[in-house]
Structures are given as C-alpha cells and as structure tokens.
Length: 322
Ligand SMILES: C[S@@+](CC[C@H](N)C(=O)[O-])C[C@H]1O[C@@H](n2cnc3c(N)ncnc32)[C@H](O)[C@@H]1O
Image (cartoon, rainbow, N blue to C red):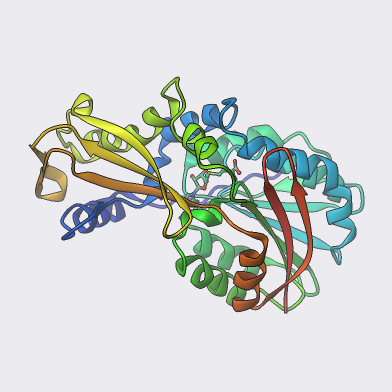
C-alpha cells in the first residue's frame, strides 16, 4: 500500500467564512464543511450507526448487494476517486469488487485529516489496492487526481452518503457541472442520494434522542472556540433540526437561547445574537428520482443505472459523463 497525504491550511479560510457568515444581514450561516474537525468526524461515525439514522445503512446495503453489477458497467482500467470519503467503510465493497479484475488506485479526497486517517486504516488491507489520500477540498483534489491519471484510464468518482444534498439547489447542479468539467467523456460518477420519506422519520434522524447529532452540530461553536479563541458559551445555544418544505431539505441550525454577544478575537469580530436567532449550519436535500435525472442531465451526465433501497428510501445512481 502506498499512502501519501497532501496537507492544506484551513485556518485562514475558517476566519474568512466565520466573518462572512456571522455578519450576514438576515440569516446567519456557517458552511457545513467546518462540522468535520477531528471531534466532528468522530461524532459523524457515531451518527452513522444510530438506529434513527438509516441513511448510511441503506447506502451500505446497496453497495454490498450491487457492487459487482456496478463494476460490470465500468470500462476498465479504472482509477477511483472518492469525494468526502469519511471513514470509507462502505467503499470496501466497491474496491473489493473492482480489485478482482485489476489493480486499483484509490484516492480519497477529504477536508478532514482525521477522516482521511480513518479511511486509510479501514481500507489499507485490501489486496491489489493502493491508496493515495488527498487532504483537499473536493474539486481541488479531483483536479489533482485527474491530472495524474494514465491515458485511456477511466475515472470513477464516488460521492456517497448523499453528501451532494448538502449543496442547496441550484448549487448542486453547479457543483456537478464543475465536476463534469474536470472529467472526460465516459468517466463515471456513483452518486448516493437520500430520497424523500415521512418527515417524522427525518426529524428523528437529524435530532436523535441521545443527542449525538446535537453534539455534532454544537461542536462547530466549540471548534471556533478552540481554533479562533472565541468565547461561545455552549449551553447558551441549542441544536435545531427542521424540515424546509419549500426546498425539500432537512436543515440543522444552532439557536441562541438568549440575547448575547460573542467575541471571536482571531477573526477580529464581536457578534450579537438575539434570543431565538439561529445560525444555519447544514442542509440535507431529500431527492425524488425524477429530480436526480434532471440534475444529472443539466450537468452533462446520463443516468446509466439506479439501484434503490426500499427499507430506507435511498438511490445509488451510476452516471456517465457524456
Ligand atoms: C456527510 S460526510 C459523508 C462521509 C462518507 N462519504 C459517508 O457516506 O458516510 C461528508 C464528508 O465529506 C467531507 N467534506 C465535507 N466538505 C468537504 C469539502 N468541501 N471538501 C472535501 N471534503 C469535504 C467531511 O469531512 C466528511 O467526512
């Protein structure tokens, strides 16, 4: 196994985004990518095994059942890049199926070094797979992987766990267009998408009774305390999960329980929160099958095949770059 990591400094980006997001007029917001520091990545692993959060198990069931069928539709030799791999547990099914036919180069692209380390530990034992990890933003990492591929090699991009749903429409189409611009015709994208389901089930999934999702969300304030020397008093804020009917997305917010002012010295900032005011920290869009084909077509992909989990409605979509 060959393992390399390319590091990047996120501190100045965090300062810029905290300044922009917390001084916005109207709804305050922080980008969801900052949920994943070492604490956040570990908490996400726990969320993925909670009984209320069926999404990861549905994604995993589909990959376990259909990885051979998915691989049969590729045109090898194929290099695999994974955007936001997390711990990479589910990816084992794809890598094992593909490595029966060829030596596989697997490139997880992760903003979280903790996730990248977990992924390399999780998948490092598979025969005929070499791992090169990129500690990068999605598209920066994909550009590097694409630049290193051999001529006539197909690229398979994995974007699992319905992470695409974190992009609010039309940002999802824009992101897929940017990805398509890096790919060549005939390259493949395996896109995991959570489908619409009863709202009470979604509310339970994003606000579990143990409070793990609440800790995951509030850790964002704790991270800003740790990294930017801020003085958020965490018990004076609470986690909120709500379904936004107008856009068909679950949203996570952090609500201020009282009027308060927070200092963030490293960002040279002082922010006042009204009682009840929220910071919007994440969206998770819930798709319909028609919507997926529409988004794919708008971004220059055709849907080659779809596999659906009935237990927790979820679709694995194999898209081919036109
Ligand atoms: C919702 S988790 C999904 C993890 C895994 N793919 C799964 O399905 O369980 C999203 C992952 O993407 C990573 N991530 C979030 N924003 C990113 C970005 N802009 N660039 C690279 N990685 C990012 C996070 O660190 C996290 O591990």
